Image (cartoon, rainbow, N blue to C red):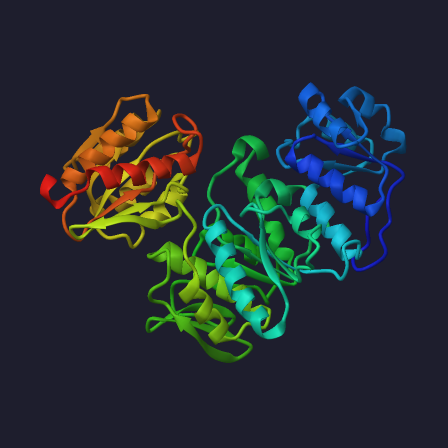
Amino acid sequence: MALAERSGPVTLPDHVLVAGAGVSGLGAAHLLTKAGANFTVVDDNPDGRAAATAKGFAVCSSAEARERFADTGLVVTSPGWRPDTPLLVDATAAGIDVIGDVELCFRLDRAGVFGAPRTWLVVTGTNGKTTTTGMLAAMMTEVGADSGRIARACGNIGTAVGEVLLLDEHVDVLVAELSSFQLHWSSELVPDAGVLLNLAEDHIDWHGSFAEYAASKAKVLQATHAVAGIDDTEVHRLAEQTGRDDIIGFTLQEPGDNQVGVSGGRIVAKLGGETIDVASADGIEPAGAAGLLDALAAAAVALTQGAKPHHIQRALEKYRVAGHRGAVVHSGGGVDWVDNSKATNPHAADSALTGAGTVVWVAGGQLKGAAVDGVVKAHADQFRAVALLGVDRELIRASVNAAAPDVPVFVSDSTDPEQAMDEVVAWAATQAQPGDTVLLAPAAASLDMFSGMSARGDAFAAAAMRHWSPDNK
């Protein structure tokens, strides 16, 4: 039984199971409480059960949940639960609708449970999601300064979608960064506008295959206004497969009809038979092709929502990149030190390196089976030097030695995160020349050594401040 009809009164099943008592699960429980639903939180972990009980929620084990399948009309799962989780497989086999927390938010919002339904703008892709979401939220905030409508970035960028719905202040426009996990568990989510930025292999262990991963991401192209990164071969293919002729493409090239692109140093849109001079393509943060692509994507979505060129220009002038996503953390002696610790896979590192000029590349960590040869070959001519750390450092060294045998390579074998970063940064400082960029774009995850990508980026920034001086050449 569906929980809610689009733009209609809410219809609740007799009983709902919430799978998981983590942050997402407890958030879903709060939403269901607001909707007046009868629900039980399922968790086999004693700590999870205790957390749910402390909130006053009914709890049960997976075995007990199966005994309640007969009177259960819906399962709301946490995005961390894989599709092959036995409870979810069994629920689906029993004919029970299994959805995620974001899908629950959408259905309840469209049913008016939290007041007037919001405008949903969804951003997804393998890389660039957070920057694009931030830019788009800034653009919609500029629109809101004229219209009075409040826009808020949410989802994986910080505040959960459900938390925004529960705010006392009514947010009119949700600019939501969503993952492939959240989209996988969304069956009725049709955003007012959505953008698919790019695609590369990621989270294959969760989805089972790249095809399944791509299919989850491609759901965003069902949006009323769909936007796609057509410079990305896989995204272009998926957009064509929809059969739609109204998808707006964004590109670094001169735009064609129904596209947003770059012409003469300007962001230009060709929409509805009209050519629109949108904004300057210069001075965008983060610098380089990746930042410009994110700006193009955000502008394309904003234009579908009534944004004018002056709204977009003002937003891009004000926008500052979030930490660890291409921020310049130190400059001196003609050398910029750039923290792109968020580049946790080769695709993201490729984006960070594109347009970066001559670099001392700082990389390494957990490749998680991803191939790095392609990004190394593509950017070998840019490397002044390469400094490596982390568990898969030797795999990257082998790729660099094969593609750029004359490029100096330093490898830290230290397993202490602070010492390893200190060693690679100290060496990088001796290699960088005026006009160069020392770029942390690891192409790998951070959890082999650091508590997360933020800690890795912070260590890089601190070491850069300690070691850079034009006198240490």
